[in-house]
Image 1 (cartoon, helix red, strand yellow):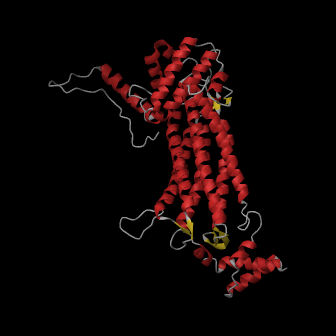
Image 2: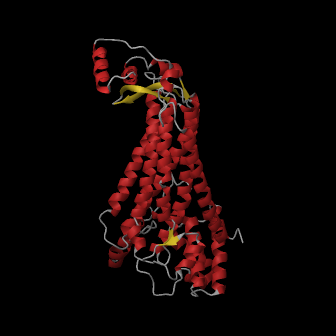
Image 3: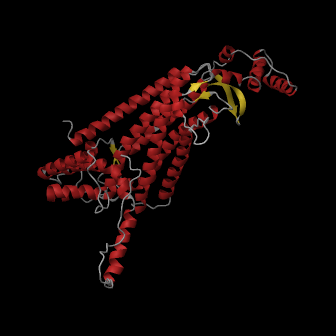
Length: 479
């Protein structure tokens, strides 16, 4: 659910109806109590309703899992359980139609859902909060939301990685110079460029496993961080919600606030930096001075004053979003870095950088996966740029293969370069043939990359199926 452009209107003081007579002097109670309370609510609630709108579905599903735990713990009668389940599923359907809202009278998503239940089923609705605090409730909501979102990001990242592997296969013999210090170094290729970016991204995606294990743990029953004096069967709620394990110590859930968001955003930053590096290369290598990559018109934008311009805005904004994502991670690190154990209201402000960072990551991955297959390569421009200094190291290695010690060959060729000697340019086929070592431009190892992409897809399908099955069962869509 996109929340951009929306705002929450807040009243920071009582409304005053126009009157013909001057208003009476406010009472001491009004000036000292009511106004500060209104300001207090506006300040402490902040934008929480706005961000909590993303959690409506997950708060309802979390409550459906919670009541399964309450019934298993014999803290809820079958009658109340049936009434709550029926009302929660109705709330879920209403939310799916976009008609479940968090009103001004609600402090957060939790109070909105509980208010709905109380209106629908009366006293049974007041029992839904048994055995939990809003602290473990929001932790559960966030973990369900994160599981769904991480799977989406993982899928988008895998599509980008697959696109880069396919690009490498199409252009594995399209040669151009490689660069160090932004100076021509040695021969490279469009295929080697894309293969390296693909492997970097694949490696980042493969790191989802340990992160997933941290998210895939039920916090329900930890309450405000110290458990509750009730015979809760926490495992029942865990199983109902499809979590693989529990936060074992009840203090763990609040200790993990901030840590979990940091881990999620750090993974996102890793993906984003891979996408950003690709984007920055496209901006440079498609410029008129290089021309190795060619942007199709649909991936470029024009200028308001210069008719000839074809600007790489998509790629520049990808680079910028990655930089902004670094800021989201920094905000989370600062929020959680100096806190003592237990719950702190500071945690409320973790939502904004977390959600914003997840949005940015998704936008980047989706757009780059869309763009990479549409890039073209100018083989002639790339090969023309290889003439000269980029082939000097090839001459050194040719002499080494002929039996000359490397250091002697290096010094001899360096001296000849200073004298202006021009070396013969090998053919493209010879340049490729001489680079058959594992991972070189003549031996990219693309089948191995395809196998790793396939493994990523299998993991995603397995976890998506497990997650969706648990959510569908709670929603009453399966038996």
